[in-house]
Image (cartoon, rainbow, N blue to C red; front, side):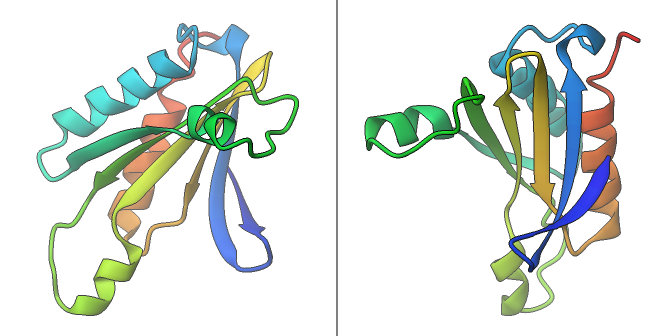
Length: 130
């Protein structure tokens, strides 16, 4: 996974997954695989799946020409609530975009190392063909 700073302030993780390296045929299949990981984790709660591409299309917003599908899966690792401030960095989401010959998976760096490691592992596990 590649780490970068988006818009000069948001720490993000990114994985470009060539379609030839995964058995997932489309964004729906990747979202389903991620949901299975979320559902299997005893301390993670699935919240929703948001079809960002459909929403942006419906409101007439611009979409990069190479993005043919884009969804976010939303979930929470909220294993503690030590103060009200942590609500600002919850819940978590992984974005999945179909770029034609590859998928791009992205997420904002969580403030909890456990969440970062799990999310990285979930994304990397999608590369099941070499």
